[in-house]
Length: 327
Ligand code: XMP
Image (cartoon, rainbow, N blue to C red; front, side):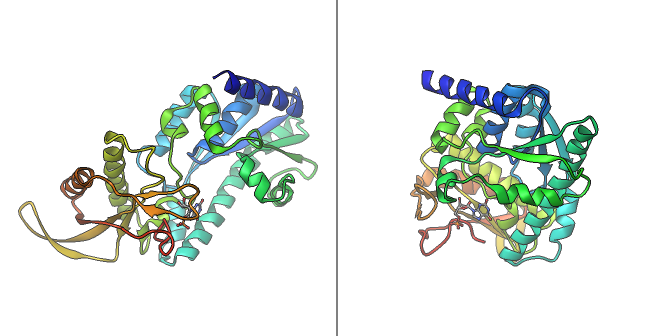
């Protein structure tokens, strides 16, 4: 729309002014809409002086890494630096089954991997004489209000400790979405021609599938969950319900087995839980009354197509008392 065109143009002009003619910027992409739109705006402003970093931690859902590495790059022409850290995250998660411990491990590894990539990209820029590095963040208006309105300086400070960066390199934040609400960000994303899968992605937690496997996270368990989750999402989309449902986690009860009968005989497989919810802001949520025929298709397809899963269950708990995620 006209307003969105204006917002985009205004943001681009502001970023050109802030970054100047020779500044370098870096932006981490998560696969979500905020970082993608923030990056796309900055790319329009300064082109290849922006480098995006995508840490593939192996905890994304089916197709999401490709959406970033292939579709987002094709749509924007952004300079993308991909770090394949899947093995590193799996190694770090070995033996970890406590939810908060998982979050700690994933958060810690993410920062380490991202900072190493950043040191590589910005170290090279500094060697060419760049004095100021700009960090692009997809901060939204509600985050700004929540944190008291100031610029997020703590994040900047932590960057002074990053190994491999020259002492005198200065950091400045770029937050192109600071004045926008989520629905406006999606409109801007559409305006910029970003892939619909990214623009309309439902909320997805940073620790990803790592907190949707109840028990230890392993390569094989991730594969099972990725397949089951992909089927559930496909059927939700086919039923035209994506925008009615806030989120629909699919959870693998990896340490639970139950007896089933599939194909030629008796199985001893794992259950998955489907957790569709409606919500306004994730603070409270209601379990979504999905039509029985949609549930039936999800259940039939998962148990037919994912050999290790022999039971599909539905979570009918609201929040509170249940949280949206199981961990
Ligand atoms: P809960 O499970 O607390 O989730 O009802 C509320 C919302 O937050 C998301 N969530 C997370 N997002 N890191 C994130 O970035 C996390 O560790 C995390 N845990 C939960 C969840 O998907 C829901 O949208």
